[in-house]
Length: 94
Image 1: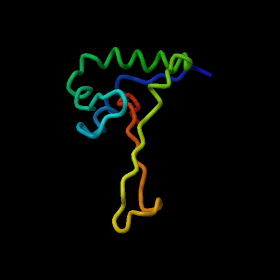
Image 2 (image 1 turned 30 degrees about the horizontal axis):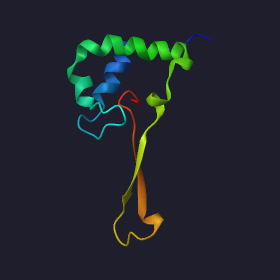
Image 3 (image 1 turned 90 degrees about the vertical axis):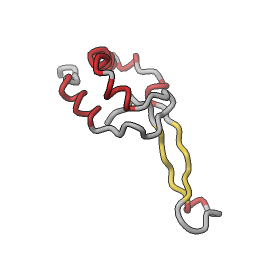
């Protein structure tokens, strides 16, 4: 089976789908910068494809997030009245 690779077109499409000022994850980078600094797309693409070829290069900081519990409406004294929100690193683009 051939190694999977992300194309430049797929990367740009994924970046365009992101929201620019959503809360960033542990990397503290807003999607705005990935959208505006298009000169880094080639380097980002190479890094992503390098990690796909050699998954052991992926550090825990690239796949770890911060989870916050946000209260739902109503009485918030019970755990079921909260919902988790995960802030993932910006490069964790779906």
